[in-house]
Image (cartoon, rainbow, N blue to C red; front, side):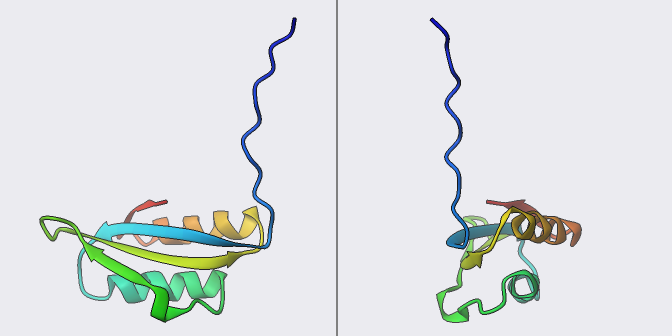
Length: 91
């Protein structure tokens, strides 16, 4: 009897893909995130962007949804967000 490891579910592209970006609260953080996301996934609906402060106000989370076209797009977006030095996590 052989055991098989189940494969992770695959994402079928293109698809609507939710993103949550967490970083230190500060002037221009939300605009920075949106401008980077817009470069990688043009057409982000800014009316659907949700911004929340952390309990102590030190961090901000920016939630939005993009049309993901493939893994290369998502990797490039993640890399550019992290390269800002202001982003702590991208979920």
